[in-house]
Length: 357
Image 1 (spheres, rainbow, N blue to C red):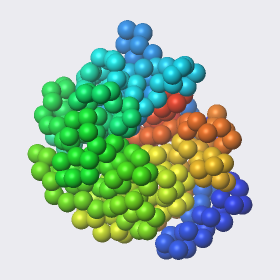
Image 2 (image 1 turned 30 degrees about the vertical axis):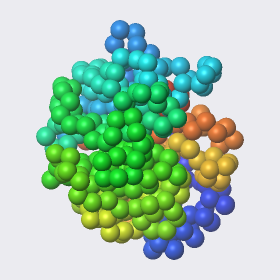
Image 3 (image 1 turned 120 degrees about the vertical axis):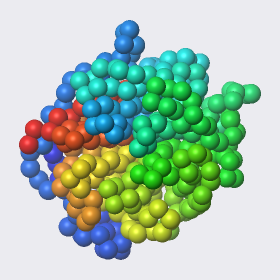
Image 4 (image 1 turned 90 degrees about the vertical axis):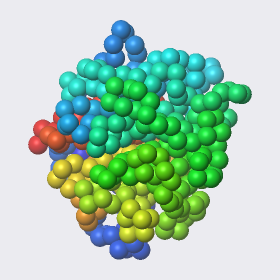
């Protein structure tokens, strides 16, 4: 796998113009050089012969020695009829919330039967696990009380809290519409990206650790502070909120009160965001293609979290911009040694990229 800095002339022009417009350095493009990573084949193994399902978000445990991942239940892909994507856990009791050690072994799992399409995950400072169900209403069976929910679990899987209206989309304080991701601040406040659909609520909701509503911001649109499919939400070491505004092909940055700080367009079509302890940002782009984001390629872009300067691009080697499947790493996590973990929903892989230089 190689690190690549090239983009087509169209992609470079779009990046430069947008960067100038939002006061991001125009030189914030990837630098050339050999890849600093080596891909580990067959890193993650599920127990009892369970095949790998579509992988949602991955995130590091606060202990630094474990990785949490959302792994959906049905391992079948687009080659089956009907296609199983968007409701892979609807008829399964398999656990979708899985904890791995850094050798790829499962050490904990739970959540079976509670989700239809588990998607986002984060671990709070107390070790509790927050998981979103981003299923669309069209994939919820009549009368089913799952979906449009956010769960808070204890470290071994006991349900501590459930936010949302079971099985029903909504736009009020007590409801979500396909919540895609969640991040928890050091003080316990919870920020939920609501939601997965470009025409949905398109807002960030803020709650206390006990689930009390605090505030929200955002709506559907293109202006700063507006969104079209909030696919990822993450927080840097300064407490700034980074939102992967995927259908707008940009990352937006906010403070914890919702004030817009910056917009970055140099990270492609952002599906997942992570930070390391050295002030680096990692953005997974699993959807850039000839329709959604012409001139850009799928892969993981790495840059400076302060300036937005992109230093490395780990291209997805099997990606084809002419094939609109949405493949490659959709979410990314980074351990303390700089190794990356990429969750791939369509190829159904959980990859480890070992830092070698």
